[in-house]
View 1 (tube, one colour):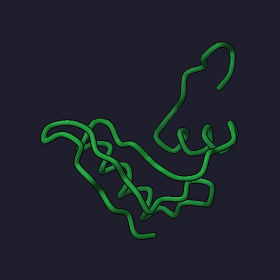
View 2 (cartoon, helix red, strand yellow):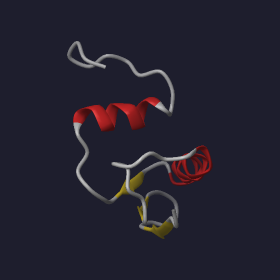
View 3 (cartoon, one colour):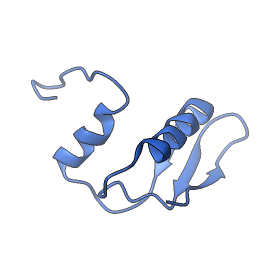
View 4 (cartoon, one colour):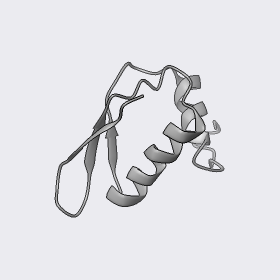
Length: 72
């Protein structure tokens, strides 16, 4: 997957394109996404709308999630 980054502010936030989170993300691509999150603090990911299960699955790759409103 070819990830493109567009910086939104010189110190904080970027927009990533070329990512389809509705498809499986391999370890290499996830490592690149995580590095961008670490660098920019906020990374806007554009693409198809995700189901709740897809969003939870992707977010869970960043680490242990804490329940919100009894769900996790």
